[in-house]
Image (cartoon, rainbow, N blue to C red; front, side, top):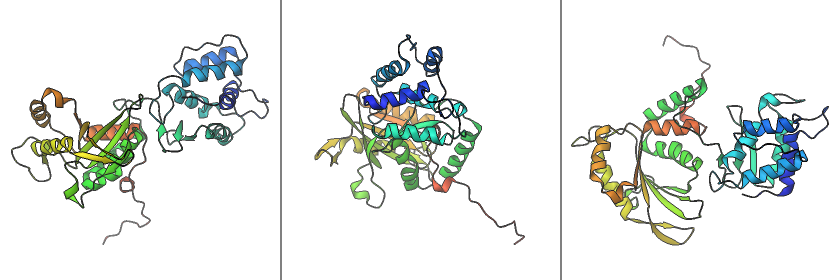
Length: 329
């Protein structure tokens, strides 16, 4: 990824703090402080004693040449640089929400197609203006959650307990996969089953080499088990297997290239649990060539990815406020 020299110099001046101290919105950083800054960004760059802002600009250019986190996202290291630069505890001559510093950074990054913003966790992120994709440092879905994240996760659990299959797809899965970098996400819906061919969603993902992989999703709102017959709202894994085979064998039309293509990989997504018996049954059923084509996601995976991606909760998951007192009738 390449930024204009003007943009790099503007960000470099912010990192160096090259402004009058009485009005500066950024901390002044000497040579040793610049080295500490890039250490805080998990890099090994050390200031070599040359002109500070030109050295920082060249360092940023090297960082931007690293592999990108996605087709519309800068490298993870650059996202960490912005997050460190805009740390609210480093505010100068303004409040902790840093409106002035954020406005300066917005003007600098707008010409590159990005917009910085503060999220609920008080950290600064970058949003790609054309696709609305948020660039985030690599998120670990298995890390410990904060108290606020645990509360949001519980609200999402309650939402999934009462959500329909269409709500699972439209309110949870579509925003999640968009955030993860997938494109052309198309939901088949359930109004016209005749054209679904075993897939609820199809989408594509662009590799760094610009090759494109196509994905299909078969989503069920409840638990997937390996019982002989479908019980209640639970789905039988054998039925899902048949739908996945139908998905992999049926072409989809990609209007962006004007051609029909086959789905390369299939996701089996459950709003509930995928039981161990169901996973074992499917693992034994698939041959070696198809094993890599089929992937699993159950409720725990959805919850963890949704929370670490810092996506807004569906409207139905937010607690309703009421001004009425409890009445005896």
